[in-house]
Picture: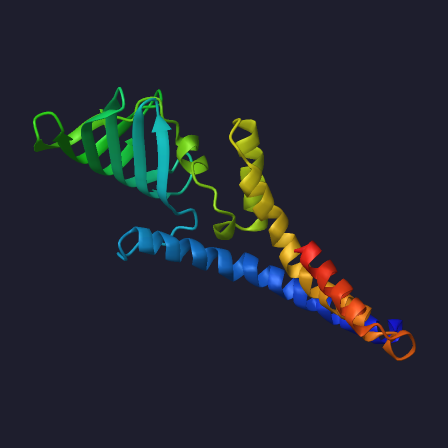
Length: 221
């Protein structure tokens, strides 16, 4: 049995390595670009490697949405910002800006501002406005960690950053483990097949062996 299984396992290791490399070099980048493109209403997005899209934050009672977050500190760029100003659970204003630029002391300069006043039911515009006070740049880059859009080493670093910031990291940790367990499942296939394939002529029990093989496969996944 081992003479038949050994080359299959070796081939499976090669396939697993290829799958891991393809996911790290192609899939995560494509998933990130496609998601950013769709969240940007299918308009062109900057070809930067650190693009995030549709990032939401809760700042006190206020909700903040950043349509596009590009790069990292100190070259962070935020576009298509919406701030939902709430008081006592009721919406007071909606502030939309084309761009947000970080200033000192966790403040931001909003450009291309449009303000909807819910009490007066009117919209007014102004070229610039300071806002998003208390929001740090790291909050925006940590606000959305999608394992499908980050390579293994970047995701591992993000998990450490989330844990250091006291943010939930269970989903990111599970995604990190899946990046290894997914490709390794190809090595499992010949081993599970061997449970049902060998020893049938002498011992029989085809159904029992098949059930054991399938049960082990489902247990792994």
